Image (tube, rainbow, N blue to C red; front, side, top):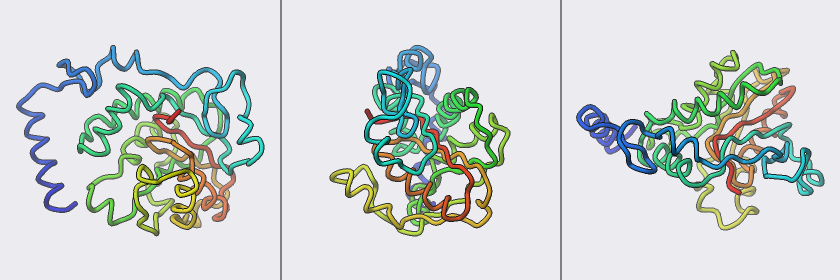
Length: 234
């Protein structure tokens, strides 16, 4: 963590001690994400594509995933990246509001509870060490803590490493550029061999990052790779 980030964190902590918490979306006092805003946050829907979590009219795969067969065995997304959830993600990633991570991670853990798939390891999508140093924390790791606890599986924050400091995916011009940026960005540890891994990240847009991580885990010998994200861009 650099000096600027440390000062910002200290200021936010002091503010939290002096001022009451307010909802990141509606600004009412009480919680960082109030119950009404959370209840009204739009869900992905009852029939998401099993591979990319895009909404469908019936259970199965979307036409794109049926043809391309991306490496992820399954992607589960809890919410659409809209409204209160979008505000919460931005507060977590860009405003150093780490205190909201347990609230969001609990929503992911509740969704993960409904899965019957066996999991050996929970792995957050990693940040490059330079970006981790600048930000001071990995938001995916914070979200993964309650997920791992609920699934009863170890949280292995170093199972994956980001070896290329590529620009943020949010700045990519299109899906092709997103895929190109992460093509060789990750590596997986050998202890992934034979393991059933659950990847955790905050948002899925094109799934390029998640699929790049999944490929490296399979190259390292992983038996199965699934993923869960808080929000899906629709």
